[in-house]
Length: 98
Image (cartoon, rainbow, N blue to C red; front, side, top):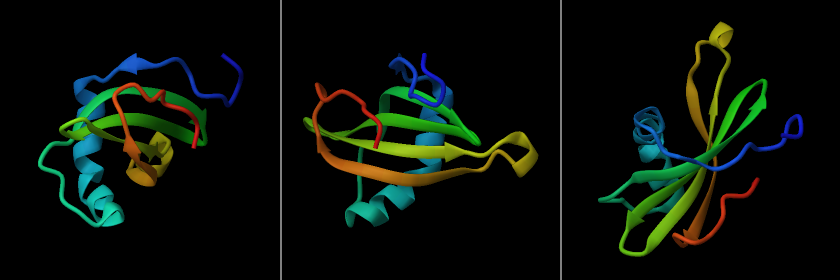
């Protein structure tokens, strides 16, 4: 992996789903709608000053969104924050840096 570049795609874990649940409200605010389904499918990570998580989330039907969540370093409390979001994604769309 290139330093600072996103790593390989991995299947979502319970930890990633918990992270998604913690930022779901902010994703709904950004999208201007509520999601009845918000299930993490897969993700990539990027090590920065903390970690960026690029996560593909199923939001119902054939619809997906990609979210970028930043997790702060332990010395800064390990808080998570939704930093960006891409809508109108499909199951087949690759997770890329955004």
